[in-house]
Length: 333
Image 1 (cartoon, helix red, strand yellow):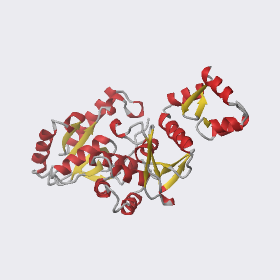
Image 2 (cartoon, rainbow, N blue to C red; image 1 turned 45 degrees about the horizontal axis):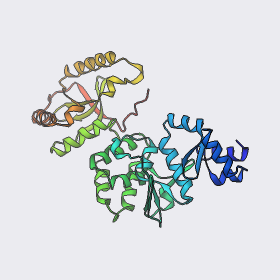
Image 3 (cartoon, rainbow, N blue to C red; image 1 turned 135 degrees about the horizontal axis):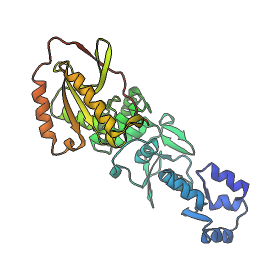
Image 4 (spheres, helix red, strand yellow; image 1 turned 90 degrees about the vertical axis):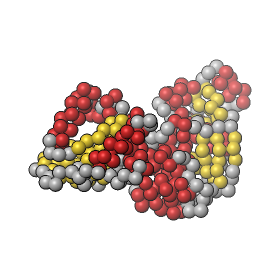
């Protein structure tokens, strides 16, 4: 590859346009021949890449970033930014696959357009709502979450906000400022409701879903990520805590056992969980465990059990202390 074209491709995730190639001295016939032989691959109309590099990028999980870059190169509008679900995907936050279509979502201050594989929304783009994610420009995490929150079901929007706050991709103040700026936009009230329910201490989508189920059932809002100590010794950290009832709720997602944290085996995780729970029960703490399946048809049974336990106060004399952590912990290997 000519150095001029190589330099251009390196700034664009390995992609380059037909104009880039011609500027570097490649004629139309040569471009067509390189594509025919498989040396180059046509990513989009007038947008190309070296075939082996493109395959490696796809295998490395960069498909949507490549698609967004290709669309922007095709449009030739540098003031268009990646937004909505596309920006959310590039932030690496969790969401249901149905909410993350392959269609590239973009925003432009004056243009509305829909084409093959992309949609451009027309909306204000103040400079504070945009940041660089080389080689792309994206809406900021706060603006992205508000835009998604204006379109997504409430639960999904809160899951995204919880995850972003946990990962410290934004602060609560930034989220609420973005909500305020969007006042009057379509769906803004939906985003505001989601932001009002967000809590960055939730460490998994299951914890967020469970908390929202409790709120929906009219139960007290629990404290999250609470340290239980006896004489200063840490017995453990519970996902949700009801102080008056001395009731702990643990959310057991499948990932805890199929992909244990810090290299532990599933058996080791189960053993540690049992010992931790036994130690807490010994000082008068009661437990409810919630699993993924409980979020469906099993929830009424969980709700009834929680209500029964919350109707009875915990031990009047307590040998333990319960202290909420100011933030959750991002689980990494």
